[in-house]
Image 1 (tube, rainbow, N blue to C red):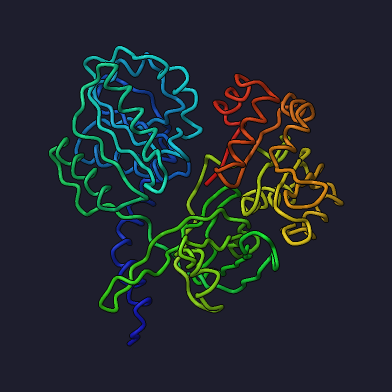
Image 2: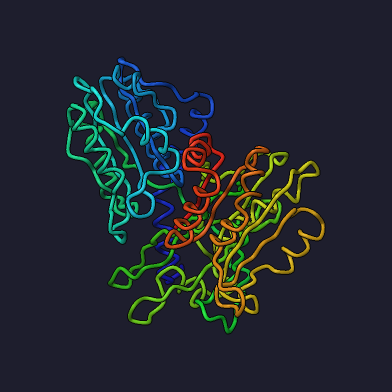
Amino acid sequence: MTTDPIRWAWAAGLLLAWLGLIALMVLQKRRARRPLQTPTADGWTVVFASQTGFAEELAVMTAETLRQAGKVANLISISDVDLNALKQARHLLWIVSTTGEGDAPDSAARFVRQAMAAPAGLEGVSYGLLSLGDRSYRQYCGFGRALDSWLRRSGAEVLFDPVEVDNGDPGAIRHWQHQIGLLTGGTTEPDWAPAALDRWTLIERRLLNPASPGGQAWHLAFQPVDGTPDWQAGDIAEIGVPVAAGQDQTTLATREYSVASLPSDGRIELLVRLMMRPDGTPGLASGWLTQQAAIGDEVALRVRTNRGFHGPPADVPLILIGNGTGLAGLRAHLKTRALSPNRAETWLLFGERTSAHDAFYDDELTAWRTSGILSRLDRAYSRDPGDGRYVQHLVAEQAAEIAAWVERGAFILVCGSLEGMALGVNAALEAALARERLMELTETGRYRRDVY
């Protein structure tokens, strides 16, 4: 019998989560057979606004709980909500995430612009709200709070106080589940749980930028123990990081990373920046992954679908924009293109600090450019003498060409840091395309982001 506390925590986590895994698999299969619907006056309407897929998962479980209690429940993405139909609904349950400093998910752009611009006549409509956020941001649950304010100003009746979830806090999620149980009069046991984490082995760790003026960036690879799951470019790896819980006990804290590989690679690859706290100690997850976990160690990991960052078909032009470790998510899309013989033109614009130390995956990118998998490759290095540009400067310089690609039907995918890069790129794209045009691309799914 093992005495390793991490293995005990692993076993306990799997035991507690297996019911949640089975339930989620069943729900996903049912959802695949059942299209999203529109708000109606009958029963309950569950509306979700998701950036990375977590809000959607909770919405699916909420709708299924209502159905199991004998209620009519319609599930709908906020991108498909029609305000006039919304006014006909009687019972609304909102599950929404906040991205960055108080921003709405990209899928909510049209709803925010068209519906939330002014109060609406929602008298006679009752609602509950589950708001997902992260207290490390100043505008905690910013979009959820803005939505709650708009609903109140529109005359809707609050069923119960909004439930706010800090970084996936299971206690807050259980509280939401309890509220749903009170509404339906049914039981909600067992407690909802995140899907069980699978067993993977850390097989490679390589520092990509020795002597860089920026933080260390590490290439990590994990091999599945029990068979390779399926995923696609844009999806996210959730990793269970061991956390001491006192009395020689260990729990797992989940952290998310963009996946840089495909199932055909037979392994998950990540590009992880070692983060340092103000006191000089390494960050919880990045420190463990890059400094403490040993090659050969088992790691708890699962891949979560992130439809909000999936790419277009290979025969559609694609513009990829990112910086730093955001290259991970873009690399997976390039790998997808490399597998297709009928790919359209693909353009990568990327920014980092120095060409000498931070040209991540340079050999790979150069080979793709030479073979034509990459039609264009533009890179900026902010610390290089004679350059000093960031990736948003590349976007501004190439504004006319980007606009021409968009007119030919190109999608734009952005991956990397929210601070500086994402906001700067968004401003540069607005200048290149006009704000209304960029909003149209957002609403139609041709402008997608994975920013953090």
